[in-house]
Image (tube, rainbow, N blue to C red; front, side, top):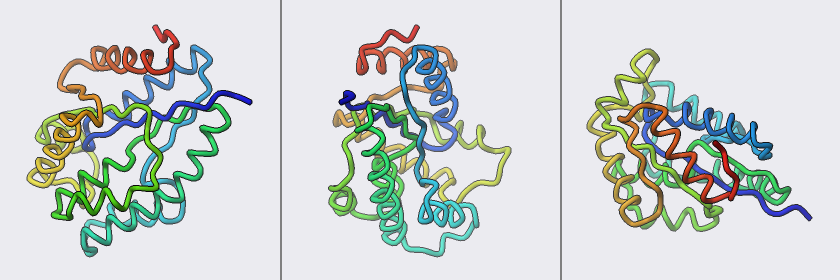
Length: 201
């Protein structure tokens, strides 16, 4: 039986550099023969597709509590898929997981303790990397596309504050992405090497 795969999650506001760092890590893992898959939340399942459509429609017509329940339902289904992949010995690198719900819906005024209770079923990642950036900078980075209902400065400031609190409590590793991309990549690489025991350089 193959050893269980590792579950690595990237968190942060849009424009923090998650997609770039995930792609760079994936290339390193592939070069070293580490079997892995890339996942994301919202997922590509039916609930996840609905959430994406909602986020991109520009009208936040659902309550934050309803948003949280939708994200959690999507995660419940997605977690079953992730568990199967990990059991096959394949590492999963995921763009967002349950901390996104805690941060985004928490920033909208939902009780974080209630949000945590909803996530009790969720798999615990082996490593959570928080790519931190000031929302002013993050919004500049995504200014070339249509913004989602979750992207405005004052809201993202509250999201960031919650994320930083989770990092302070030791739930995730904090990386400053105001630095050059290659410096962030080196730190991601070092943290992942420490987890999986494979030299990626």
